[in-house]
Length: 257
Image (cartoon, rainbow, N blue to C red; front, side):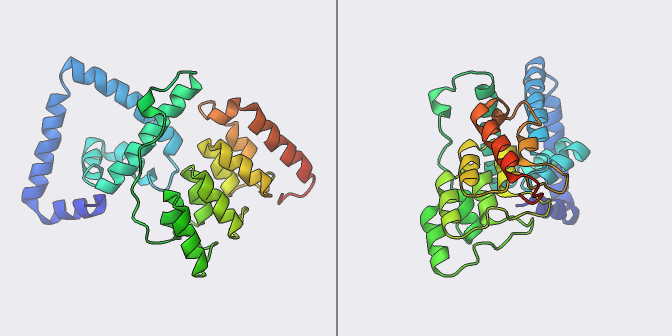
């Protein structure tokens, strides 16, 4: 059940709404214990960092806005959505791994690789998120528009980069995806790679002719994005920063490069 469906059911079914309110009340009572309050503070710190990092992410921006406005009630609603919980859990794990990497810590063996993800592949966008190279090639063979966009103006290439699917990124480029396509915010796949800290996809995009000097709707280049937040692992990656600077310099006076 999606958050919107849950809200509608609460409006239509007073008994269900009462159950949800009681559940939220029990949670609040449980949170009165010192142990739970300490755990909650740690959780809040992580959520604050995650919110700052993902506040504009199309999959999570509505969630963070709802939590800011309605608190635990919104959390309860969104946590009824299994697909959202799966995506958010993955985002939290990746965020924790990036924090550990930035601190120079060695991740425990269980966190060395993200767990296997399950995506229902219905279109080229799903295939890109899942990194399903075979599905991407199948879609390409059936003349699917490789530069088609979703509701946010993102191409499959944007999504493959955002989800850190290097081989899918490579295949999409080879199949003719525009490396300089922009979403509704004017962000290219290169800007996505910079913002999400996707090192290898970023280098691949540069080798494939991505325009390093191209700016988004806020006037930011990929280099600006990569160096904007010290929590981004790319801020300390000299090779990546050098490559971006060289690409910007090579673009010269061409503002669309």
